[in-house]
Amino acid sequence: MRQMAAPSRRPPRPGPAAKGRKAGGESRPLPITRPRSYAAIDLGTNNCRLLIARPQNGELVVIDAFSRIVRLGEGLHGTGKISEAAMDRTVAALSICADKLRRRHVSLSRAVATEACRRASNGEELAERVRRETGIVLDIISAAEEARLAVLGCHNLMEPGEGPALIFDIGGGSTELMHVDVSDHDVKIHDWISVPWGVVSLTEHAPLPDDSLAGRQAAYAHMREVTREAFAAFAGRAERFAGQPLRLLGTSGTVTTLASVFLDLPRYDRRAVDGLVVPSDAMRDISRRLADASIADRAEIACIGRERADLVVAGCAILESIIDLWPAARVGVADRGIREGILRCLAMQGRDIPVTRREYRK
Image (cartoon, rainbow, N blue to C red; front, top):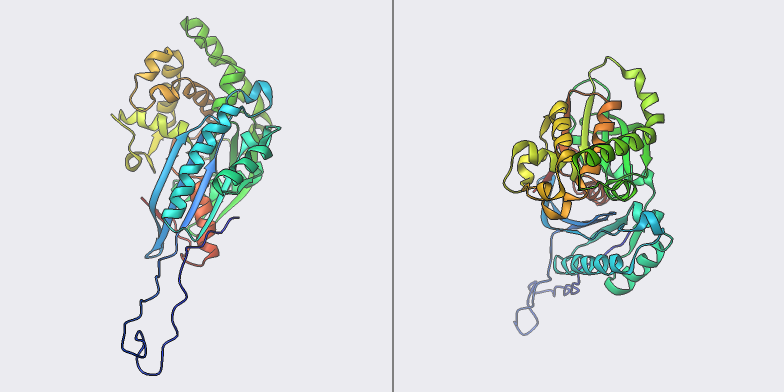
């Protein structure tokens, strides 16, 4: 964990006459004081994202944010290494993050890297380059820690109820499933799994042809089979919940993108998406329509665009496999996750906020 302290001047010791004045009556400058602020950086297989937040009235208020698609894991499935071009894109994005940390006088921060750096043979090399060129210390975290932070960041959006609850995080290089018990003040993970299939790794493993509908449908069926096999052990354990009213909450670009398509938004709007609940059948219908569409047609959809058009179908395949093993009637959507989990941990460490069901405001 990396601490970044805002520069400050030592306050003058007050004299016996009057505080804030020198012996000759000249005014002393008062010390600069700033409210505490925290920062969280999540370097994933596809995105580099930053949040900076400040405690206010018992909640964390986001004061700055940054997100950039860096495609860190591009080509990793075939080579086992992070490419130089991907490193360059990532360092450029993290340099912007470092500048924001300085300008916002962040007092405590943590930067984590996930599946791409875990899997790559040169992940530590990237971390050292980032430290040298930006000053940011990257913590390459385990899949278990990734799951824990995702749950901490989004569990307060789980639908109320008594039924078994599952949180999932579809990333660029991996997907985590967490069976949780959620209360107003705490969350406990009962069971979890991490599989090495995310939107980037699955797309590279099973490319979607663009020349025919039949080819796209066959490739999508293959994606579904790959993810179904990867989740098989967890699915077997989930069978004991058959017939119960299941609850399901997702955090990731896949569910927020599909939620935007469901709402037919002209542009992405976090306020409309974060906390939305979508019927599972609607998620399936959107997933299959996107899988059938050409990449050009997907790119024309406002909240997908060119940057997500080639990756969104893999996310759809993973999502459908999750709904298969956890057939909840609805899917909750969270535009929050690892970064908010980090901020929550930092704020609790600083004893600045209580733990409440809704403690992040943007």
